[in-house]
Amino acid sequence: MPECFYTLPKRIEDRRVVWRIEEQLRSHIELLSEQFNSLDVCNSETLESQIACYLFKQLRQHPEKLLLQKHWRSFLFRRCEKVAIAILRLIPNSSYSCFLPDLFNMGFEVINDPLKFFRSFDENHSNFNGKQNSNSNYWYLYPKLKTFSDNKIKFCLFPKVRELTGFTTIGLTNLGLTSRSSRKQVIEALKQSQSPEIASQYLQAWQGLQEVKKSIKVKLNKFQPEHFQLIADRYNQLAPSQTRQIDRETICDWLEEIGRAIRRFLEPQSISLDCQFEEGTTLIDILPSNQNLDEDLLSQWEINQTRIALRQFIASWLSEIENFENRQILLLRYGFNLNQSRIAEELQRNQSTIHHHLNSLHQNILGQIGEWIRQNIGIEPTSEGLNEIKNILIQYYSDQIDRLTIDAIKLLEERRQNLLTLFYVVGLTTAKITEQIEISETQLEEFLKASEQELYHNITKQIEAEIQLQFRSLAVQERIRAQIKSKLPTVLQQLDKN
Image 1 (cartoon, one colour):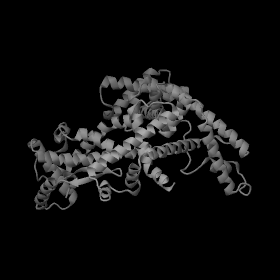
Image 2: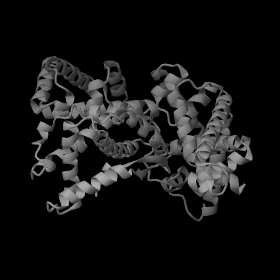
Image 3: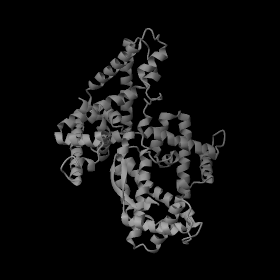
Image 4: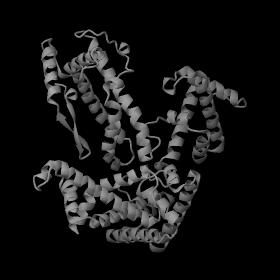
């Protein structure tokens, strides 16, 4: 029996949606199931499709019936959960899974009115003939309904996710990025990743795309091979001295590469210290093997001691940075994973200024570490090995955020600390917690929310004081909240052990 038509969200916990059964809706679905089963419906998938087809026809014919609207609201809530989880998996940081409640609430604004939601759905393109028992009816309609719903929810959520997380390219194809980027962005992106000659060719291809798109007035996702041929023709006109004519396949490849360059330019992964090593590999693991050091001369114990000493040196060096703007940029970049454009917005600087500032900091840090390696290990560090500094920086600032979180938790009264431990460490639901203390579940949820808000406020104020910066944008504050929430189980356990 298709529960997607008779369940509604109860709450979100443990980064998942908890559903409740709406008895009125279930009873109606049970009646429909009996009706269609009498027509020899042989499996649950066919039954669900038949019921969906019938309910949609009824919604079109009787839009005033609240029962039908509730069925489709239930269906859309399920689609919203599916889309939200899929979007979260695209974000390059697992801690963002705590944004599920935010995405779900954003989706609610779109799906709460099924009549309005499906107003633009064209059943004629789904071979929907309105015959309840038609064999071809449900096979066409139901998949189209799911695809239509997912796409509409997705296109609503993606812009909000980009704003919330700072990952401005999420949900955009490389071709889409190329199409929507400004000439200045394209030039800056190509300057970082291509030779001047190739960058010039790509820029002319981008120019051809913009001109063709404007002249034919066709959406990019509707482009056909002949449209790309028009771009190729325009490119050949723009570059008459070209020794060979460029075909549409080459143009497609170039436009894709432009999109990849823009993605690297805009997102955090594009920084020059990206690490290409397997997960778990460390700088000290790499250096001995690269230099063919004799294992008898450098025992495992000595390697571990060297690793500890290197990390202590890095932590000491970073903690002694006196320039507050440098401290701000490093914390925002490596502590909260903000991209360069978001850092520029927060510090009220130009993005190119932040880019050059980061590069300068990277070179300074690499130089300090390289000198330490020469003096303490007696080898010449390789550029490949030094790339791993990115992971060390992320770990350092993660530890700093943990420290501030622990300090903020200690400022809470004991009752609030115990509640957070029960909820985040022990994993008890609010219903289970109310069995242990004399308080209603509603009061408990309000108390828990207030405790979290006080904690986030304390941590934010400590961070602002430490780097002499008052956070301006809501997106950054949400990022901090997400980071802290993802860390709470581990930090609370650590605090409990101490």
